[in-house]
Image 1 (cartoon, helix red, strand yellow):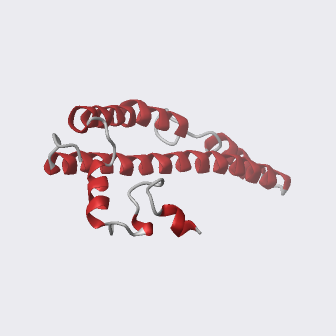
Image 2 (cartoon, helix red, strand yellow):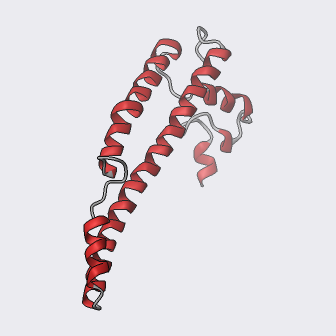
Image 3 (cartoon, helix red, strand yellow):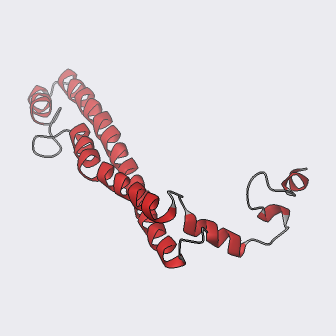
Length: 142
């Protein structure tokens, strides 16, 4: 850890980064929601076609009219939900987390975890090397 970064600051910045990682996971689920909802919309359309072919015209018409292409929120399809999330929350959070790291930890990511790794690893053990190119690693890979 850089000498001018105290542990409390590294922990606080690490917690903010951890929160961003959680938001990244949430955003991934939002993309999953978007893709699954779009897939379902096409499946619904297929089901309406099959109902029509099976003679259930009234239900098929209702499904096509009222469900196919329906907004998931007032005035929004899922891509618009994603865009609003990205523009309103995610982008702002990413920028603020990066700026916080730049101001407090020289921009280094996972500084707190790096200090934990150094504290918890066994010095000289090939499976506890500090970096991928640390001495002793090659012996372990044979």
